Length: 92
Image (cartoon, rainbow, N blue to C red):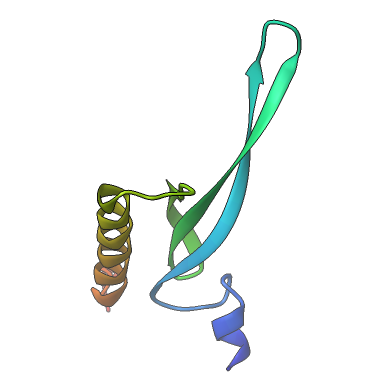
C-alpha cells in the first residue's frame, strides 16, 4: 500500500473509514455520576484528506432487524458517496 493511502492528510479523492469505537456517556445519578460505555461503528468520510463527515451507529448487544437495516443503509450511503467523483475545481 502506498504511503498516501495510509495517510489521510495526503490521500486524494473521496474515501470512507469504517471502525469500531466505544463512546462513554456520563449520567448524573441520584447518589453519584455514572458512566456507561456504548459500542458503535464510526463511518468517517474524507475528501482530499479532509474529514467532511462522521456518523456513529450504536451496536446493541441484541440488535434488531431494524438496527441491522440502519447499519446496512449507512454503509451503503457512505460507499455510494465515496464512488461519486467530487466536483471539479474551477479551471480543471
